[in-house]
Amino acid sequence: MVFPNKDEGSVRDIVVQLRQAALEVKLFFSSSQTDGKPSLIICKLRANLKALRAEAARINLPMLMDPEKLRAVAKRGLPAHGIEPFEIGDEKTLQGDVFHPYENIHMKYDLADDVQDLYQRTTLGGHFSSTQRMMLIDSIIVNVAHVNIDKLKADGALHDCFPLHEVDELADLQARWVAWTYWPWRQPITHIKNYFGSKVAMYFAYLGYYTTWLGAAGVVGLLVFVAEVLFQNNLIADIPLSHLQLNATTVVKVGQVVQVYTVPAFGMFMVVWATLFLEGWKRKSARLALTWGTATVVEDEQPRPQFHGHIAKSPVTSASIKFFDPMVRLQRRVVSWLVLAALLAVVIGLTMLIFLLRYYVVTQNPNLLVVTIHGHAYPYGSYVAAVVNLGQIFVMYKIYDGLSLKMNDYENHSTESSYEANYILKAIIFHFVNSY
Image 1 (tube, helix red, strand yellow):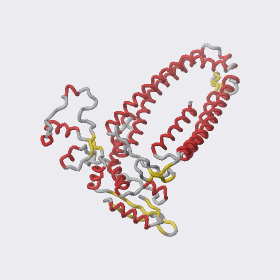
Image 2 (cartoon, one colour; image 1 turned 30 degrees about the vertical axis):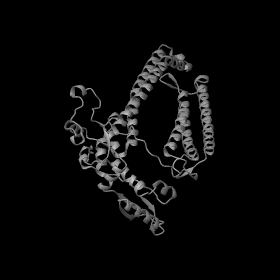
Image 3 (cartoon, rainbow, N blue to C red; image 1 turned 135 degrees about the vertical axis):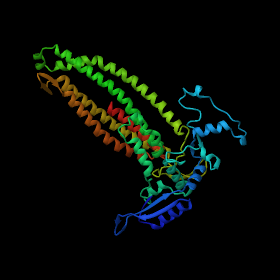
Image 4 (tube, one colour; image 1 turned 120 degrees about the vertical axis):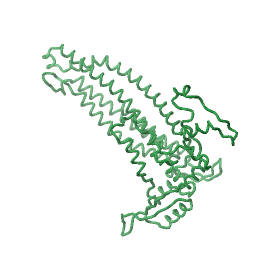
């Protein structure tokens, strides 16, 4: 935790709360100075194993169980609890299964000594992964010490709060991940999840999956392009050279004749590709959620510190909550979407102008932008239009991205998930219109 060196009394009160919550605290000043004194107060936090175990038991933290230990427990049974020995399947009946009965089982953490050996250990031998330790410390800060990090940051009382790297775990992850021998489909996703968390791991899992499928589409696209070039060259070879030098329109028409066959074929392939891609990702993401034990996890969200409204009583719990008038919220969303719709109209208008430019330099005046190489005339008007279109996409993306972020803030969303979902929706709509 990094505090601005302005109010030492406030920092002292927060440190007292953290220590009372069984967190170990170390304070020191930053080397940077303002007006002759250190500008920041740095507070390093950590929790011992006893505190982590207590918090894990309090919040019922889901823990991955060791499949071999569970198998052994099933074979010997639990006579004290009236459970007879049993065994699920055998090697013959289970050899074709992707998941075995004892794999990917998650149970809530318990402090009892007789179950500690059943939990799956990390690569470094501990029960809790780096992400779980950070999550437990964050839970202690918020729920035990009652320190609202987001509110402190919004009020300016806290400059920043972030976890530090674990050198040994980071080195182990780098050895597994940062290497040329690892292709996109061979990323150590489980190790990424254990270090950075399931959200970051799911992101890289999607990138690897997407890149792999794009590679397949790219190979097919390259083959189609090569076929177009060969077919076009064969047709051009049958046309007199003098005619080509005088009329570049012929080259354009030949290319269009070739694309009559290749474009529909590649389009049909991409339709099938997109369907298989989406269904495959649904399956992969569901498998990852099952493996990580996050399939049934629902996060209890707190209001965003940036959310503002009137203090009122909850009709459910009678507790004091921030209330924002639904009609005002609706009005803000209407204004926000009208502004973004106007920007989308500008994008559509620019796209139409680019199409007119392409029509002018390719169809109306094909000889306007032509280069002659070894007696062959090659028009490049379509490439100029493509470059202009690319520039328009880039510039409008920058403008829209900043404006949509401001409009999202203006809508005053109460939770982080609502804020992110609305921002993603705006981004998807714009990217679809701007790119296609």
